[in-house]
Image (cartoon, rainbow, N blue to C red; front, side):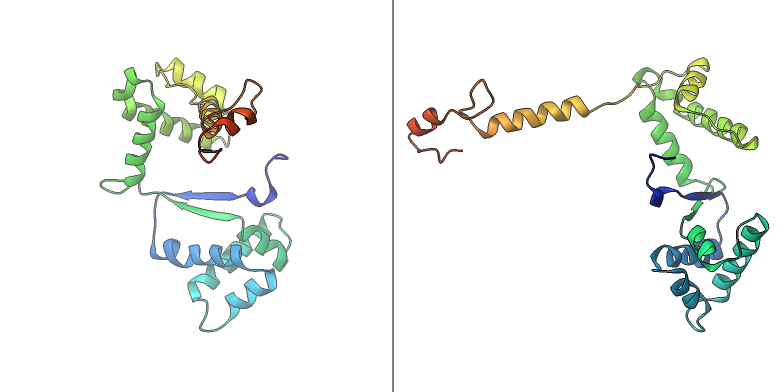
Length: 203
């Protein structure tokens, strides 16, 4: 985690069920926490009558209760610091035509080799099962382990898409095109420019 900026240390809570409170009040609380300048400003806004709703205040109170039970200090700054790093991620897997599943399968098709694109749904199912299995034990799986697991299951991936060399080549070509009188050392041939009929206006 040392290489990750502190403002990117986030706590994500995924839910496959959504409600008016989750989509509304709870998300509003987290947004207020992220945009507040201080813990004092945040809690003053939450406590102000006619500003925050009861659902918002209940969410903050319940979250504080659970955090304190988990060993976090009963301190406004500590509670606010955690709330502003918290994200509630809503998925719609229980819907008749879930957008999240459709999007996931689209990504699966991109990840697979051209010959295995038809296995996108199977890949998505495999990833879902692996996620549940890993999450049940509170474990983790790194990139290499994931690739090995998918290879063992017979999935052929498209491989790493590294566009860095292509972008570098395009930048080089663009730079060379900018000066039609570039010499072998990478600079512009001033003598050639002076001899041009336009006097160098073409560059």
